[in-house]
Image 1 (tube, helix red, strand yellow):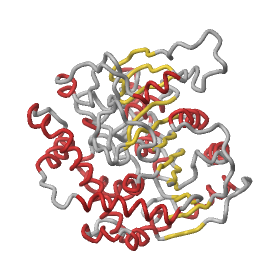
Image 2 (cartoon, rainbow, N blue to C red; image 1 turned 45 degrees about the vertical axis):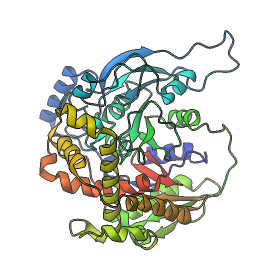
Image 3 (tube, rainbow, N blue to C red; image 1 turned 120 degrees about the vertical axis):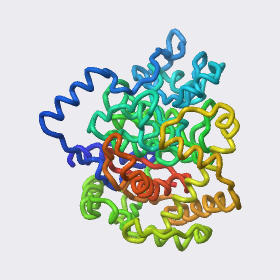
Amino acid sequence: MSKTINLIKANASNPKVWIVAGITVAGILLLADTTRRRRRKAIIIQRQDFGAFLERFDLIPFPQPPTPPAKLPLQGLTFAIKDIFDVKGYVTGFGNPDWRRTHEPSDKMALVLTALLQNGAKCVGKTVMDELAFGITGENKHYGTPINPKVQSNIPGGSSSGSAVAVAAEFVDFALGTDTIGCIRLPASFCGILGFRPSHQAVSTIGLIPNSQSLDTIGWFARDPSVLRRVGHVLLKVKAVEPKRERRLVFADDLFQLSKVTKQKTVYVVSKAIEKLSGYQPPQHINFSQYVASNVPSLKAFGQNSSNLQYGISALKALSSVMVSLQSYEFKTNHEEWVKNVKPRLGPEISHRVLAAINTKYENVKVLYKVGTEMRAALQSLLKDDGILVIPTIVDPPPKLNSMKDYSTEFHDRACAVLSIASMSGGCQNLFLGLCSIRK
């Protein structure tokens, strides 16, 4: 716990790095007996890169003047990218061999990649991802599932699984991924590293294969909070020095009831982290599900029986339903023709979701976008310019590998109920070793 507190203290004074939030159970790791340790060791020997990389190459930083005015902000850092970003001269595979087979090498470079190279970072390869960015487990039938370095018998989380594993296994200093319905936040939590999902459209997505444009964001992973911040300064074009402002923490008490980590422990960790920092008001507490139900009226059209979710968070269950429907509708708009023409080989879970997206007839699509507009307004009203919403990133530990058939629906529903808050509001969300926050 002291390590987590120190990491937060080191960065909480930076008003553009909004880090302080709820604890997830994924931060608690248990090692198995000697037999399992031997098995894990054997896996490491067979897959030296933990299965994180799909393709290795070296993209060196862009040439600089003979005497540059100052050291570049990312000089000396290495990074990897998810197989969803365009690299000139390489095929962008979108996590699927049939997509790779039916597309030509890119003739351009993703803008986000250009920005990192211009600022001194070196790219060393592309990483494995869930097929078509349509999963949250990190498993891939074709290229293998990247091994979670923190708990190797469990899933790494996805869809940016390879990027998270590459950072957690210390192959790179940071890595790029994307977040649509939690694809940065979930693997960061499960792999025990730092992750940042910026606000929607804060980072250009030119040169990115879209999954769902209304939800897609570019995010990044790091082990070191200073690296996470340096990458953020480059991609978000943040000034090095920002004026300090008062901050107000708002705890979503009802969501912590879903997690095995108690609200009291969360409040203690955050309080210790900010006790010597100036400008933090006393914490506030809220029943967030009730707040959403009262301030996002269009959700009433998506009311569902939430008997399989504890403590009656029906509003967030409805919000997650809207999020999944919006993702599916936009995926169909983007890729229906390719799916029907190519008939790609997909893993069972991804195949189910893709076919459901393609075959569904979407009625009253406007209300999906209306929910997003209302959700953004509700978060803006709650947080204004000084608020930080403190929530659990994920409420369950990472499931075992190859076990999703047993409780896929329950895990997916509980995960999406919490992950939908940032996705549907468009707000940024930080994860720090199982601590996360949302800011508008």
